Length: 486
Image (cartoon, rainbow, N blue to C red):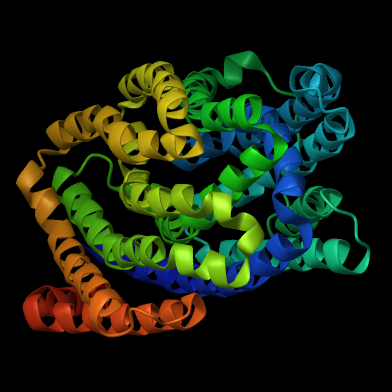
C-alpha cells in the first residue's frame, strides 16, 4: 500500500473516531430531548415550524452557493481566493436572510397562519450566522482536521437540544422554543468555527472564482432539486392535513431520520475530503465506498427495522397525543435505511467530475417525487407520503448508482454483497421479535412490549452477525487494525 494511501487511512480512522464519538453523544442528547419536547409542545407547535421549514430549507440550501464543497474539492485555491470565497459566503447568507424577511408574509398567507411571518423572519437569521462558519469548517474538512470539526458538532448537538428544552419547559415559549434553539446553536457554532480557523475576507472577483462558481452552480442545482424532493411532502401535508397533521408527519420524519442522519452524517463529514484525495484512483474509491457502506448499513439497517417494530408501542405507551404519527414513523423508519447509504454516492459523483450528470438526475427526481407524494396523500392520507419515500424514491435513485459504479468500475453485485450481513441479520431480528409478539407476550402492555422487543431484537441481531457473518466481522476488524497502524 502506498504512503499516500496509508496516510489517508490514518486520517480516515482519526476522522471516524472523533466524528463517531460526537455523533453518539449528540444522538443520546437528541433522543433524550425529543420525548420531552414532544410531550411539552405537541404536534401543533411542531406543525408551525414545519410549515416555515418548507421555505427556509430552500433558502438554506442556496445560502452559500455550494462554496463550502468547492473549497473541499479544489485544493489548488490560493489564500486570496479562499478569502474571496469567505466574503461571498457571508454575502449569500445576508441575501438569504433578506429573502426570508421579504417572503415571510406571503408564506403566512399561503398557509393562512399569521404566526408564520415572525417565525420565518427569525429562522432566516440563522443563514447569516451560519455563513461565517462555512469556509472555516470547509478548510478544516479539506485539511482532515476532524477533531476540530467534531468539537464544533458537539457544541451544536449540546446547545440546540438544551436550549430548546429550556425555552419549552422553563419559559413555555411553545413553537418559539424550536426556533430560538436552532438560531442560538447557529450563533454559537459559527463563533466557535471562526475562532478555530480564522479566515480573512477579500472582495470577490468573478475572474478569480470561475471554476469555484461553476462547481457551485452544479451543487446548487443538486440542492435545489433535493429541496423540491424533500420539502414537497411537508408542503403537501401542510396544505392537505393542517397544522396538527403536518406536525405529526414532521415529528415522524425527524425521529425516523435520526439513525440514518447520525450515521450517514458521520460518513458525509469524513468521506468528501477522502474521496477528493483519491478521486482519480478507481480502486481506492471502490475500497472506501464499500467499507463505509458496509459499516453504515450494520448500524442503520437494524435501527430502521427496530424502530418500525417498536414505534406503535412506544407512542401508545408514552406519547398518545402522537398516535397519528405511528404509521408514518414505521414506514419512514424503513425508508431511512436506503437513504442512509445513498448520500455517499452523489457526493462521490461530485468529487469525480460527475456533478453535472448528478444534477440532471436530481432534477428528474425533484419533478417526479412531488407527483408521487400527491398520489400517496390522495389515496392513503399522511401515510401515503411515507409510502412514496419507501417505494418510489429508491427507484429514482438507481441512476445515481449506475453512473458512479460505471465510472469507478464497481460491479453491482459487489456493492449489494456489502449490504448482505446487515440485511439478513435484521431480517432474522424482525422474525424473532414478531414471533415473540404472538407467542411469548401477546397480552403485555405496550411499554413492557417495547422494552422486551428492543432486548430480543438487539440480542438476535448480534447473534445472527456472529453466527452467519463472522468472516465479514473479522475482515472489518482487520481493516480497522490496518488503518489504525498505518
